[in-house]
Image (cartoon, rainbow, N blue to C red; front, side):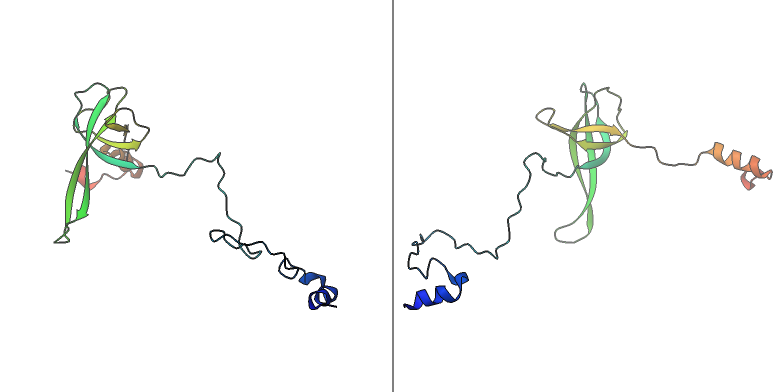
Length: 153
């Protein structure tokens, strides 16, 4: 009995293509496969790629065009040599469908699909901040029944 036959008789688990002598030659470009290799993760083709929405905030500097406003966005960036924070300004063209913004208005720019060659943002009014007005102070003094120092003569 040959050595390979005795090995196959002892343990059938040792049966491989190399013991039988019928190994297929490997091409120099093929990668060896292993049962220990991890399966590759496949992305689903029906899911869109994740893109972060970009929001910018700036001041309207020109509103003479129809349905378009020019918005100047100011940001702080370190100076390349002196490392001091310097204001950097950039102008963006934004879509204003109702022509509601005037020069000096502060708007928020939302990234959208390209509307024209230079317009890829939509101008949106900023959400109102919680600002106390004088009427709130008057209501507070009426609730307490005591006049405030600013109202005393």
